[in-house]
Image 1 (tube, helix red, strand yellow):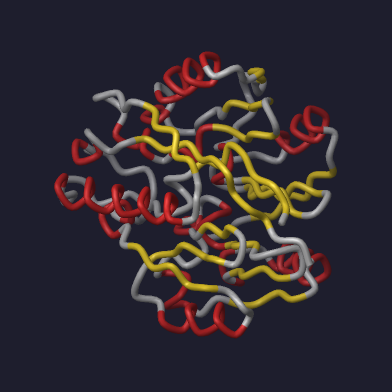
Image 2 (image 1 turned 90 degrees about the vertical axis):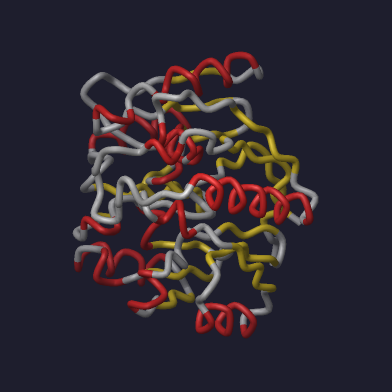
Length: 272
Protein backbone atom coordinates (compact mmCIF):
# COMPACT_ATOMS: atom_id res chain seq x y z
CA UNK A 1 0.00 0.00 0.00
CA UNK A 2 1.34 3.41 -0.97
CA UNK A 3 1.96 5.87 1.84
CA UNK A 4 1.92 9.66 1.81
CA UNK A 5 5.38 11.20 2.13
CA UNK A 6 5.47 14.91 3.00
CA UNK A 7 8.24 16.92 1.37
CA UNK A 8 7.50 20.53 2.35
CA UNK A 9 5.22 22.36 4.81
CA UNK A 10 4.31 25.95 5.62
CA UNK A 11 4.36 27.15 9.23
CA UNK A 12 4.12 30.47 11.08
CA UNK A 13 6.46 31.22 13.98
CA UNK A 14 4.31 32.17 17.03
CA UNK A 15 5.94 35.47 17.92
CA UNK A 16 2.65 37.09 19.00
CA UNK A 17 0.44 34.09 19.77
CA UNK A 18 0.38 34.96 23.48
CA UNK A 19 -1.48 38.20 22.66
CA UNK A 20 -4.68 36.19 22.04
CA UNK A 21 -7.57 38.05 23.69
CA UNK A 22 -10.77 36.62 22.20
CA UNK A 23 -12.85 33.42 22.33
CA UNK A 24 -14.25 31.84 19.15
CA UNK A 25 -14.26 28.16 20.13
CA UNK A 26 -14.83 26.21 23.38
CA UNK A 27 -11.13 25.39 23.89
CA UNK A 28 -9.88 28.97 24.00
CA UNK A 29 -8.34 30.38 27.19
CA UNK A 30 -7.10 33.93 26.55
CA UNK A 31 -4.49 35.30 28.93
CA UNK A 32 -3.14 31.86 29.80
CA UNK A 33 -0.65 31.40 26.97
CA UNK A 34 3.05 31.32 27.86
CA UNK A 35 5.17 32.84 25.09
CA UNK A 36 8.39 31.04 26.00
CA UNK A 37 6.67 27.65 26.11
CA UNK A 38 4.87 28.41 22.86
CA UNK A 39 8.11 29.18 21.01
CA UNK A 40 9.79 26.07 22.42
CA UNK A 41 6.88 23.83 21.39
CA UNK A 42 6.89 25.29 17.89
CA UNK A 43 10.64 24.78 17.56
CA UNK A 44 10.32 21.16 18.68
CA UNK A 45 7.64 20.55 16.04
CA UNK A 46 9.88 22.09 13.38
CA UNK A 47 12.69 19.80 14.58
CA UNK A 48 10.39 16.76 14.35
CA UNK A 49 9.62 17.63 10.72
CA UNK A 50 13.24 18.22 9.83
CA UNK A 51 14.12 14.82 11.29
CA UNK A 52 11.68 13.38 8.75
CA UNK A 53 13.50 15.27 5.97
CA UNK A 54 10.62 17.71 5.59
CA UNK A 55 11.46 21.24 4.47
CA UNK A 56 9.78 23.87 6.65
CA UNK A 57 8.86 27.18 5.01
CA UNK A 58 8.07 29.96 7.50
CA UNK A 59 5.74 32.91 7.06
CA UNK A 60 6.24 35.99 9.26
CA UNK A 61 3.46 36.52 11.79
CA UNK A 62 1.61 39.81 11.96
CA UNK A 63 1.38 41.26 15.47
CA UNK A 64 -2.42 41.71 15.24
CA UNK A 65 -3.15 38.14 14.14
CA UNK A 66 -2.48 35.70 17.02
CA UNK A 67 -4.27 32.77 15.36
CA UNK A 68 -2.22 33.25 12.19
CA UNK A 69 0.04 30.51 13.60
CA UNK A 70 -2.53 27.93 12.45
CA UNK A 71 -1.27 27.67 8.89
CA UNK A 72 -3.45 24.75 7.83
CA UNK A 73 -6.57 26.91 8.16
CA UNK A 74 -5.39 29.34 5.48
CA UNK A 75 -6.19 27.45 2.31
CA UNK A 76 -6.51 24.20 0.40
CA UNK A 77 -3.43 23.50 -1.70
CA UNK A 78 -3.13 21.16 -4.65
CA UNK A 79 0.03 21.44 -6.71
CA UNK A 80 0.59 25.15 -7.27
CA UNK A 81 -3.09 26.01 -6.90
CA UNK A 82 -4.45 27.35 -3.62
CA UNK A 83 -8.02 28.08 -2.60
CA UNK A 84 -7.78 30.81 0.02
CA UNK A 85 -9.98 30.51 3.06
CA UNK A 86 -12.89 32.71 3.98
CA UNK A 87 -12.99 32.82 7.77
CA UNK A 88 -16.26 32.74 9.66
CA UNK A 89 -15.18 34.96 12.56
CA UNK A 90 -14.11 38.57 12.10
CA UNK A 91 -11.13 38.05 14.42
CA UNK A 92 -9.44 35.77 11.91
CA UNK A 93 -10.32 37.47 8.61
CA UNK A 94 -7.21 39.75 8.52
CA UNK A 95 -4.93 36.68 8.41
CA UNK A 96 -5.87 35.94 4.81
CA UNK A 97 -4.11 38.97 3.34
CA UNK A 98 -0.72 37.93 4.73
CA UNK A 99 -1.03 34.37 3.47
CA UNK A 100 -2.26 35.65 0.12
CA UNK A 101 0.94 37.70 -0.20
CA UNK A 102 3.09 34.69 0.71
CA UNK A 103 1.39 32.41 -1.84
CA UNK A 104 1.68 35.09 -4.55
CA UNK A 105 5.39 35.56 -3.90
CA UNK A 106 5.94 31.81 -4.05
CA UNK A 107 4.27 31.25 -7.41
CA UNK A 108 0.87 29.88 -6.44
CA UNK A 109 -2.27 30.38 -8.48
CA UNK A 110 -4.79 32.08 -6.20
CA UNK A 111 -8.46 31.10 -6.10
CA UNK A 112 -11.22 32.63 -4.03
CA UNK A 113 -14.53 31.63 -2.50
CA UNK A 114 -17.67 33.71 -3.17
CA UNK A 115 -18.32 36.40 -0.57
CA UNK A 116 -21.11 34.44 1.11
CA UNK A 117 -19.32 31.06 1.23
CA UNK A 118 -17.18 30.04 4.19
CA UNK A 119 -14.42 27.46 4.49
CA UNK A 120 -11.31 27.39 6.65
CA UNK A 121 -8.74 25.58 4.58
CA UNK A 122 -7.34 22.21 5.53
CA UNK A 123 -8.80 22.58 8.98
CA UNK A 124 -12.05 21.60 7.29
CA UNK A 125 -10.77 19.50 4.38
CA UNK A 126 -8.93 16.24 3.73
CA UNK A 127 -8.05 14.77 0.36
CA UNK A 128 -8.71 11.04 0.67
CA UNK A 129 -8.20 8.68 -2.28
CA UNK A 130 -9.97 10.39 -5.20
CA UNK A 131 -12.30 12.42 -2.99
CA UNK A 132 -12.24 15.49 -0.80
CA UNK A 133 -13.91 15.32 2.62
CA UNK A 134 -15.27 18.62 3.98
CA UNK A 135 -16.41 19.20 7.56
CA UNK A 136 -19.48 21.42 7.54
CA UNK A 137 -21.58 22.92 10.31
CA UNK A 138 -19.42 25.41 12.23
CA UNK A 139 -16.73 27.01 10.05
CA UNK A 140 -17.66 25.70 6.60
CA UNK A 141 -21.08 25.71 4.95
CA UNK A 142 -22.50 23.17 2.56
CA UNK A 143 -22.44 25.54 -0.41
CA UNK A 144 -18.64 25.49 -0.24
CA UNK A 145 -18.72 21.85 -1.37
CA UNK A 146 -20.06 22.69 -4.83
CA UNK A 147 -17.54 25.51 -5.31
CA UNK A 148 -14.61 23.31 -4.32
CA UNK A 149 -15.80 20.36 -6.38
CA UNK A 150 -15.76 22.50 -9.54
CA UNK A 151 -12.44 24.17 -8.76
CA UNK A 152 -10.51 20.96 -8.10
CA UNK A 153 -12.62 18.75 -10.37
CA UNK A 154 -13.15 16.28 -7.55
CA UNK A 155 -16.00 14.56 -5.74
CA UNK A 156 -16.64 16.32 -2.45
CA UNK A 157 -18.23 14.53 0.49
CA UNK A 158 -19.70 16.74 3.24
CA UNK A 159 -19.45 15.52 6.84
CA UNK A 160 -21.74 17.29 9.29
CA UNK A 161 -20.10 18.29 12.58
CA UNK A 162 -22.54 18.64 15.49
CA UNK A 163 -20.28 19.33 18.50
CA UNK A 164 -18.71 22.80 18.77
CA UNK A 165 -15.58 21.39 20.42
CA UNK A 166 -14.86 19.70 17.09
CA UNK A 167 -15.52 22.83 15.05
CA UNK A 168 -12.98 21.82 12.38
CA UNK A 169 -12.79 18.43 10.70
CA UNK A 170 -9.18 17.96 11.84
CA UNK A 171 -10.22 17.97 15.50
CA UNK A 172 -12.45 14.88 15.19
CA UNK A 173 -11.19 13.00 12.12
CA UNK A 174 -7.74 11.70 11.18
CA UNK A 175 -7.09 9.76 7.95
CA UNK A 176 -4.07 7.50 8.43
CA UNK A 177 -3.91 5.98 4.93
CA UNK A 178 -6.20 4.88 2.10
CA UNK A 179 -7.71 2.08 4.19
CA UNK A 180 -7.68 3.40 7.73
CA UNK A 181 -8.99 6.50 9.48
CA UNK A 182 -9.75 7.48 13.07
CA UNK A 183 -12.80 9.48 14.11
CA UNK A 184 -14.74 10.56 17.19
CA UNK A 185 -18.39 9.52 16.62
CA UNK A 186 -20.06 12.15 18.90
CA UNK A 187 -18.50 14.90 16.79
CA UNK A 188 -20.60 13.92 13.76
CA UNK A 189 -24.26 13.60 12.85
CA UNK A 190 -25.69 10.09 12.63
CA UNK A 191 -25.90 10.40 8.85
CA UNK A 192 -22.24 11.40 8.54
CA UNK A 193 -21.16 8.54 10.80
CA UNK A 194 -22.91 6.23 8.36
CA UNK A 195 -21.15 7.87 5.43
CA UNK A 196 -17.76 7.32 7.04
CA UNK A 197 -18.53 3.69 7.88
CA UNK A 198 -19.34 2.99 4.24
CA UNK A 199 -16.42 5.02 2.92
CA UNK A 200 -13.52 3.89 5.12
CA UNK A 201 -12.69 0.15 5.15
CA UNK A 202 -11.00 0.33 8.57
CA UNK A 203 -12.69 3.07 10.60
CA UNK A 204 -11.40 3.26 14.18
CA UNK A 205 -13.12 5.15 16.96
CA UNK A 206 -11.24 7.59 19.14
CA UNK A 207 -11.98 7.28 22.83
CA UNK A 208 -13.12 10.45 24.57
CA UNK A 209 -9.67 10.84 26.15
CA UNK A 210 -7.99 10.49 22.75
CA UNK A 211 -10.37 12.96 21.11
CA UNK A 212 -9.95 15.52 23.87
CA UNK A 213 -6.20 14.87 23.78
CA UNK A 214 -6.16 16.17 20.18
CA UNK A 215 -5.16 12.83 18.63
CA UNK A 216 -7.09 13.70 15.48
CA UNK A 217 -4.94 16.78 15.05
CA UNK A 218 -1.94 14.72 13.96
CA UNK A 219 0.23 14.60 10.85
CA UNK A 220 1.30 11.41 9.06
CA UNK A 221 4.30 11.09 6.78
CA UNK A 222 5.62 7.77 5.53
CA UNK A 223 5.01 5.45 8.53
CA UNK A 224 5.47 8.13 11.18
CA UNK A 225 2.65 9.93 12.98
CA UNK A 226 3.53 13.21 14.69
CA UNK A 227 1.01 13.83 17.45
CA UNK A 228 0.29 15.44 20.81
CA UNK A 229 2.11 13.78 23.69
CA UNK A 230 0.32 12.08 26.58
CA UNK A 231 -1.87 9.76 24.50
CA UNK A 232 -0.60 6.23 25.27
CA UNK A 233 -3.63 4.36 23.92
CA UNK A 234 -3.31 6.17 20.59
CA UNK A 235 0.37 5.23 20.50
CA UNK A 236 -0.54 1.57 21.04
CA UNK A 237 -3.06 1.64 18.21
CA UNK A 238 -0.55 3.23 15.86
CA UNK A 239 2.12 0.69 16.75
CA UNK A 240 -0.26 -2.19 16.06
CA UNK A 241 -0.95 -0.69 12.65
CA UNK A 242 2.78 -0.58 11.88
CA UNK A 243 3.34 3.13 12.49
CA UNK A 244 5.96 4.94 14.54
CA UNK A 245 4.64 7.40 17.10
CA UNK A 246 6.47 10.75 17.28
CA UNK A 247 5.33 12.68 20.34
CA UNK A 248 5.47 16.46 20.55
CA UNK A 249 3.93 18.92 22.96
CA UNK A 250 1.51 21.52 21.59
CA UNK A 251 -0.19 22.24 24.91
CA UNK A 252 0.04 26.02 24.57
CA UNK A 253 -1.60 25.91 21.15
CA UNK A 254 -4.38 23.69 22.48
CA UNK A 255 -5.38 26.72 24.56
CA UNK A 256 -6.65 28.16 21.28
CA UNK A 257 -8.10 24.88 20.02
CA UNK A 258 -5.18 23.87 17.79
CA UNK A 259 -2.42 21.26 17.61
CA UNK A 260 0.09 19.66 15.27
CA UNK A 261 -2.09 19.57 12.16
CA UNK A 262 -3.44 23.08 12.74
CA UNK A 263 0.11 24.45 12.76
CA UNK A 264 1.04 22.73 9.51
CA UNK A 265 -0.06 23.32 5.92
CA UNK A 266 1.36 20.70 3.56
CA UNK A 267 2.82 22.30 0.44
CA UNK A 268 4.34 19.25 -1.25
CA UNK A 269 3.87 15.50 -0.85
CA UNK A 270 4.40 12.33 -2.82
CA UNK A 271 3.46 8.67 -2.50
CA UNK A 272 6.10 6.21 -1.41
